[in-house]
Image 1: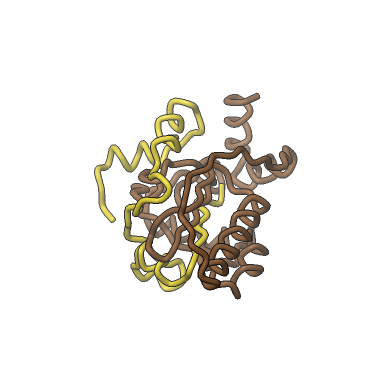
Image 2: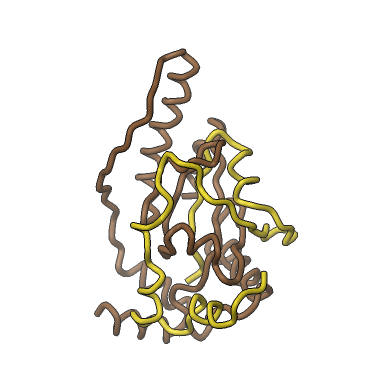
Length: 154
Length: 71
């Protein structure tokens, strides 16, 4: 997602990471109890996981996250008027790149004075599943996070 | 930033077990595409200043917002 952000930054596209809550709390990164702790965990996202996009932190009660559906790693794209034009219940760089290519082209078509009207489309996108990388992420949170995920999903 | 303590505990659950996390998953009920979306206060990691989702999305033609956490 960092690479996609860099790729489209010169086309008027901004990208942020919005810090929510710990989906898989563990011994090293336990559940959140204060904003100070939430800022520390968000800093780890930047420093340990290498998120280079600006990181914004939601309120401790997750008001924004909850209003948008509370999925653990979803992605939304908004236009300048605050209208969502893409939402995905999982974050996938290829899917976001595909959508941005389309919307950047829409902007060009508008500049070319094409008459455009929006319409709704539903589509299933497909992402790679990397079980090893996922479990490596859980291990960073702690053995408890690994154990609880195995118990929940096998 | 303060809120109901029960909500804070339930949202910031301490164990990944279905009865803790399933209650929050509501993508089907999330704001629809094509209509103005709700704004919320947010805090910048760098400097911890308060801002808002609206302040983020007005800054660019398009804005990608990835939701998530360290874990």
